[in-house]
Structures are given as structure tokens and as C-alpha cells.
Amino acid sequence: MTTAAGAAAHSTKATPEPHAATGLGTLGTAPDQPVPSTEATGPTSAGQAGAGPGGESASRVAGNPARGAEAGPGPADGSGAEPRRAPLRASAIARDRVVAVVGAGTMGQGIAQVALVAGHPVRLYDALPGRAAQAADAIGARLDRLVDKGKLSADQRDAARTRLLPAGGLAELSDATLVIEAVVERLAVKQELFTELERVVAADCLLATNTSSLSVTAVAGPLQYPGRLLGLHFFNPAPLLPLVEVVRGHATDETVADLAYETVAEWGKTPVCCADTPGFIVNRIARPFYAEALRCHEERAADPATIDAVLRESGGFRMGPFELTDLIGQDVNEAVTRSVWDAFFQDPKFTPSLAQRRLVESGLHGRKTGHGWFPYGDGSADKAPSRPAPHTAEPRTPPEAVVVHGDLRPAAVLPELISDAGIKVTYQGWGDGGAGFIELPGGGRLGLTDGAAASTAPTADTLCFDLALDYRTATRVALAASETARPGSVKAAVGLFQALGKDVSVIYDIPGLIVARTVAMLVDFAADALGRRVAEAHDIDTAMRKGVNYPRGPLEWGGELGTEWVRRVLVNLHAAYPTGRYAPSPLLVRRAAARRDLL
Image (tube, rainbow, N blue to C red; front, side):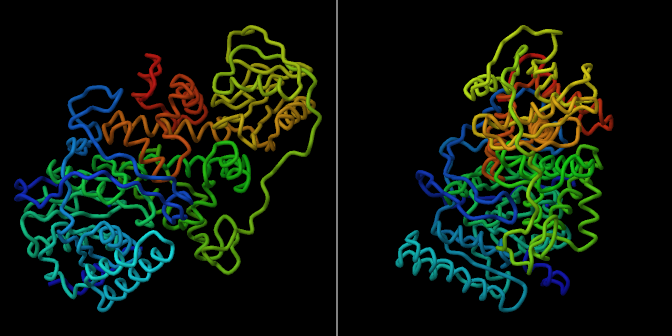
């Protein structure tokens, strides 16, 4: 029986040496069916607001290396298990087989609803008496709303309700083919739960943890048959967000991972395979999105509202990192960052932010407490923040003519936009052989940041502008001037971008500005994950687009920018901050040297 402490912990959730091989027998499987498309439209407390469409095909080719991946003997991150693509046309768990969910909180209810709507009988258990029945009622109410919206027929709802059964104890889960836990994020609690489940369920039952921060390998460690356990990391809210990370622990049997992958795909989700490494794919690669914004704020480059606006309006992200962490909860986001940092033995690349730590210590956790980086009045989750407007430069007169020297690289479209705005553009060669730049009246140099501060440039009158996802559609651009730049050059640069229809935020001169340093780090973290075989290239980009709504997959983005440009930005950042945080990953360095992209 569950201990008293364990019983409470087996309730709702708010991630060793292998043993004997799994005792899995033949599982009930269903014939292949096309994977339904799924769309998510609502905001999430665990990712960017408004998830994009899901529904990618789940067909996978067995053993295909990641496109562009370099051969190697195995995973370099020490996980002991490589992500593996599921076999082509592998079968899923039959829909008449029971799926059980342990933990009836928000995430547990969401997972149960997903399996229920997919056609499975579902058993829902929670250690708190009466909680499972309450959760079943809540799921029923959500099914009613789906009927009202025309997304589910009344007959489908009624049939689903008959398949959903609250369980009074773990013994009632004995007929389950798959058990997914969504309990508190404490390793000992999860280990105790699965040890008890192993005594209850059949030998061919799959066990899955929804952990987002614990080691799947460690969770499975005490089991007699650890090969039957894997990670199925859903994103909140599970019925809306398409992504599921399918995580293979050190001992996870390949057939278990394959079967779970195809089952999740049959449920209309977008599964991605990954090795058991801290943060898996999304929570590992996403760290710089928060960390670089916090670093910019700590260096007083700009205020939070301006940093958010630049990343939204220039970088193309759905939400800025400050408003997003307020939505997630500062305590939750900081805990994930600290967990990943500790799991990587305090690698400087994952160093947490002191500014965020102080915010958490002050009890300013975001929307749920009424105040985080921005005030929210009564703390209502749906209340718009009363945040200050971003810093925007006042209107300036644009120059009548500019001279473009060399290749502006990722900003190569700017001369065309400048000409379309009625400003005369003259082209000259490379000049001193360095990166391209725009010469302003009076001789000022305006160039795309290369990761170095404008003040370190050999020319005194130097200004840098920030990276944009698409300079045609960006509505804001950030600028920084060197300590010795002429005020007239700053005004001319502001007027130039205003003539292109952009708001301009003039920020303090820091290396890499805002978007460029953030994107370069995201690309490098993705390249590092690819180089260490955490996941395949397609899965990495899919995870970051579907899980946190990035406007590009980071590997694709790196290809658009050019691996050499990304490497140079990181090298210059590393020179400015020689802590190891910005040192480019080995795979990125190799690909840049070979003039190859990351896909």
C-alpha cells in the first residue's frame, strides 16, 4: 500500500544501473490509420501563448540518422540511449485497451481527456479521496463544451463518458495497457508509485512518466523491469498543445518507445523522440530565450517592456520572455532553469539569473500573485498587464542618401527597402574588407551587430542595429551607438529605420544587442543537442515550433542566417564574456568551417 507521505504525493502535479530486460509480451495493436490533424488555439502556462497547428504526419523511418548528423559511436551526453525513430507504419495500442492516469490535477485531467477522446477506456486515479471523481466531472464538463463548439458530437461525448471511470485504488488499474503518471515532481514519490504499479499491472503494461525535470532513467531505476518505463512529456494544456516528447531512458526497451510514439501519434499529437538528458528538448534548448533577456536587463541595456517588444516585433516571437515568465510563474520558470543548471553540474551556459532569483524571493511570481515583472492588479490570470510602453525613439528626419558597403548578410534586404522608401542608395565595395555596413551622411557606420559592442569597433562613429526575423515585416528595430558616436549619426540612423515604417528602440551598447544574441544562443543550444544526439534535427525544430511556438526551428533559423555568421556572433560574445557561456558548440564550429548548415 502507499505510505501516508506517498499517498499525498501521488495526488496532483502543479523529471542507475539497468536491470533485467523487460518482460513485455504481445500488446494489443490496431491497424494503421492516418494520424488526425490537431490544432491548438489557446494560451498555455507552460509555453508561448496560442500554440500553432499540429497534425504533422507520424510516419517515421527506422534507424534513419538525423539529416546532416555526423556519425558517431553513440550519444555524447552520457544518457546511454539514443533517440530512435519509430518503425515505419508501426502499430499503436488498440483503442479498446485501457489507459490509466495517476494524478488528477490539471495535467492528469488533460492527458486523460486526450486518451478518452481518442477512444480508449480510461481509469483515473488520485490518492486524495474523491479527487478522481471530481476530475471526471470536470472532464465531462469540458466534453460538453466541445459539443457546444461543434468539435464533438453528443453521441461521442456520451460514449466517452461511459469509458471514463474514476479508480478508488491502484489495484483497479490492473487491466491497463498503459499507465501515465502526472504526480508531484519528486523522484522518491515517482519511484515508489511505479514500484507499486509494477506489482499491480500485467507484465506487458507500459509505464510512462510525464516528468518535465527528472531523469527518466532514475525514475525507472528501482523497477524489476525498467525497460517498460519511458517518458511521455505532454505540454500544458494537454488537450490543446500538440507536442509530446517521447523520452527513452537508459534502460527503455526500443519496442516500448516505438509503441508509445505511435500511440501518441494516433491520439492526434505530434511526438518527438529524445534521449534522457536534462530538460529533454524544449526545456533544454529554450533556456537562452529567458537567460539572454534577463542578462540584457541586468546590464541595463533596456527595460523589460522594451526587451519584450524587440523580441516580439523584431524577433518574431509570440510573447516576450518577461511577459511569458510572468504567465508561467517566475517561481516555476526559475526552478526549471535551476534544475537544468544543477543537472548539467552548473555548466555556465545554463547559469540562472540573479535578477529573477530576487523577484522570486520577493514573492513576485507573476500573474498568479498580481505582480511579476509587470503589475496585474487583482492577480487574475486573464487580466492584461499594466506594463509601461516600450522605449520608442521620437521621430527623426531620415537621410536623403546612404552608401552601402559590402554584404549586409542576414540584413541583405535592407538596401532594397531603403530604396523603396525613396532614399538614394549607392553601392561600393568592401572598403576595409570587414563586414558590410551602411554609411550615413557625415561618415557614420551603421551595421548589423556581429556580437561585439559598437564601442569596440575601430571606427569611432559606429552604430549597430539588431537582427530581425524578416526586415520586411518587422515593426520594430533596436539600435545601439558606440560611446563615441556622433549624435547626428544616431538621429540619422533612427530616421532611416523610421522611414522604413519601423519603431526604433535605442538601447545601451551591449554585445549582440537583444535578438541577435538570443537567436545565436538558441541556434547553438540546438546544434549542441544535435551534436550530442539528444534528438534528430527534424525533431529538435519540430519541438521548438510546436512546444514553445518559435517562429523558426532553431536549426532552420541557423541555416537561414548562416552557420559562419552565428559562429562569429558567439565568438565575439565569448570574447566579451569569457566565462564559457557563449563558446560555440563543436558541431556549429565544424559546420561553419565546412560552410554547411545544421539540417
